[in-house]
Image (cartoon, rainbow, N blue to C red; front, side, top):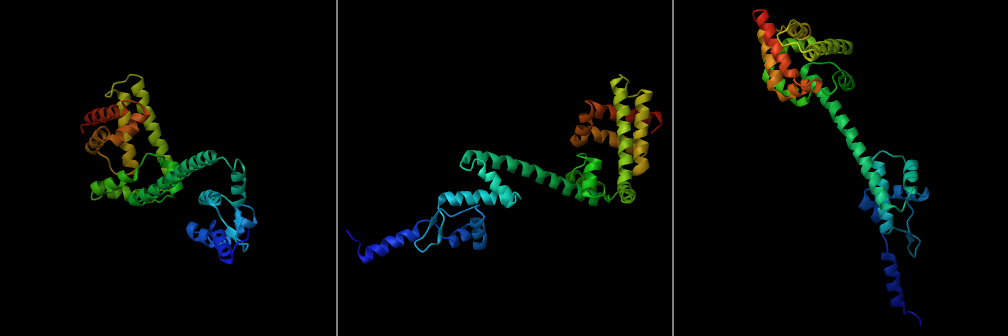
Length: 270
């Protein structure tokens, strides 16, 4: 039984409709026809079918593979690496999804670290600190937050203390900040040692540590008299962010420091 000319044309037309042309796939995926040809040439993505005229035809399996290729490209993989990754268990769809999930989580982590670095730079700019984002992460770690720095400027930006702290800190180099941090750490350790030894907050050891805390602020930022120091001590207890910072070092440290500051101020008549 032979086909009529009309039936033959219909079958040919149906053949042309099976699968997507390279142009259609390019439009759908956002990649160029040239890129798809290149993927075909290097064996990364070969069209599963051909039209009667010999043109490439892509089916659903090809499109799924292209989607995975573009995913790995988005993650920064080179074509050779993508070929290796996809050759390893190429037919394991669940395995690919798990691998993509793990890679996405890793990328989210990297992006979060990049955001943190940018926020540190924002904080530095608002506080007048001339350090790179990398230096800020090295020197300060997670102590500061962009939200808090903006809040400080809004609440304290008009004060002489804030302006003096900015005037001084803008001239500090990385080594200055690291030296300042080491002094601060030593002061915290002295407070913790006194607290862990069972010394009361109004003991000589605790009050001396509180006085060193006050002098440290005066040395590096602004003239911190005993009245201002009392206010800071109360803030360490009232502001959850400061409290959390000290509590992370030692439970009860925020309150202990506050009480030691009050006792020290009274000792000096402040």
